[in-house]
Length: 336
Image 1 (cartoon, rainbow, N blue to C red):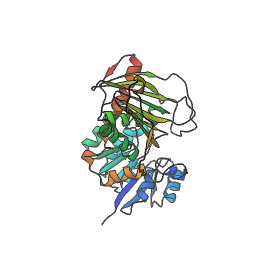
Image 2 (image 1 turned 90 degrees about the vertical axis):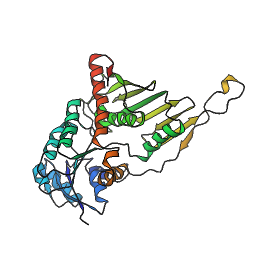
Image 3 (image 1 turned 45 degrees about the vertical axis):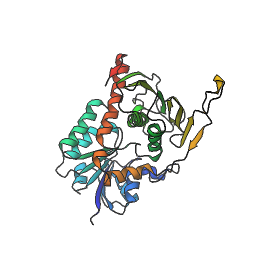
Image 4 (image 1 turned 180 degrees about the vertical axis):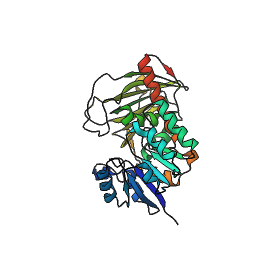
């Protein structure tokens, strides 16, 4: 059987270099995950920096390194991973999906774009050219899938409120939190947001953060009479990604950057009014798997129409960020 031919555009950290980070669960990059499959051949990589591309190709035993997207597409890849800064997504997707040797599938790094207009354009370009668009996110993580199941099965989707905190910028990390809330709660009806005013030039824990990546404090309103609060800040000196859901009979907390899931349910009340309280915390065991391997497997062999990482889902999540931007600018609640 012929192997799936893969091309990678952008030869930076998320494309492959993060495999050197000892703190990350492996594989943790596009090249790392593709390389672990026997049915895949990475036929080429592309980077505007010729030296970086050559080093990347040597490291991952890729036979061809080029500097032009057309040169990569001349190798006729079936799948192309786009791992470039998000402000370039629309331009790169246009070149790839509009090429005569367009791939059948594109795996795009998050977020889908840097504006609502560009996000819609990326989705439209792929649809009009018959290319299946996937956008990397955390929905396939066993940890967050377990969280989603507990919200639905253990607490019957009876969310009273959700509170979420995350560090870095909205396009760097915040998009993951917005996407997580969309996957669990659905799309909000309205958004009210304020932009963080602090000027932050760099973050020690993020190579991707840029000073112009806005951060928002936002309230998301849902049809089922509950609200979610997101606090996205670059003012902490540590990376932070946590969410808590409150229910009539308990709560769930996902803490420690997606490593620990804690649940509390109501204890048996006694005669005293003070006995109506939560029982002791219980940590929920989750059999974790490398997220990147799950994403690559989904792109290569999953059902696109039901995929949690298809472009349509990324577009829905980005509409929430665009609503935050508009709300912060106008100081008004924005309906979706």
